[in-house]
Image 1 (cartoon, rainbow, N blue to C red):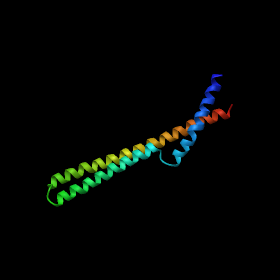
Image 2: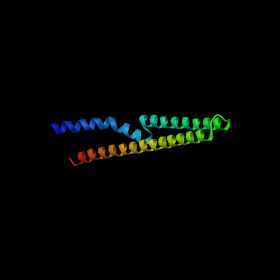
Image 3: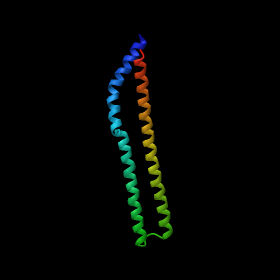
Image 4: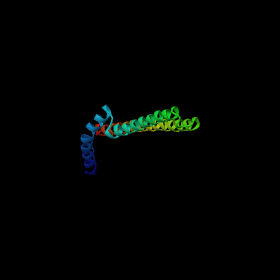
Length: 113
């Protein structure tokens, strides 16, 4: 009886979750999309800062040493930003794969009964 209740519960959850999962597969999830936007916005701000310090250097407000140091820091920050975005995308893809595998396992168990 417990097994039957568990199977019915899992089927109910799958009925609700499967359309959401399939929709997520076809496009980015809201969380992933928002996170990706945050990375892009941050990177755009970094590029604006780089342009700003270049202008400051060109008009003489920054020494060459300060300019090079700031450019180096912003480039490192932009690279870190890109790496973090790539890691997020990889982890989201891995999560999607794990969900798909779990669904297949449940379907296979159902088919063998």
